[in-house]
Length: 343
Image (tube, rainbow, N blue to C red):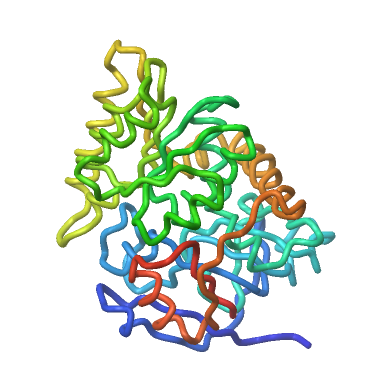
């Protein structure tokens, strides 16, 4: 049966979750280099939560359809495309546009999902899995036997950093709210309270020589504390700046101040490194390398999911039509894992 219409979520402007709209639209046709995907699962990340407030750097003009990634079945390919992809389940990074029943996506940002991996599991580790893998193995180049500190350890990215690091033989100190500590202990990490004023002293008691890498998604004072906890030769990887993206007005001034702080620390001759992880780095300037790394890194994570080594951490599942309730829950900051939307 040929499907001609589909449902999509529209973010009309800076609104509360209840202001999201559902629209019925015609299914688009893929152009050259594109695929048409019947979406089976998409998800809610901090990016969409920031976009709702108009606080995400380089977000498109309102109105638009949010959705940073998706998993689904290819139903058509654009002119000159690889027709053998039709019928395959794929994972695609989209940045926006994934909260829909049918999406046209770039083939270059799409990877085939191996048999045996459920759509919602693949969705939970698409952008989150690439981010976690690349930060751990490409940005920080963490080695077995080393120790890392992970902020946001209960989140979609942080939880995967914990799992991938433990699989790699790395000791993990996991910073999160106390309500998540039991789950983090079961994952093999040593939990600490990220909001504890004595956090630095607690981490130093656990790792007197300092940690070999810190993965920070908060910025601000947390980033400064993280920098102070690095061992000689250690690396601070900033992968978000939640503190900069809160509030009102333009997000650019606080975000640029955070980037400036990272650059300044990176320039210091003190045997410690600082970097800001950008998932899309090289997407335009070095497209072949970007594509190669996406295939390699997401492929590795998906194989670990298929083998049962990595568990897709799903906090809740909602139909796409219940996106308001799903976003409200995601923004409650009470969850362990990712909220999945099922068109």
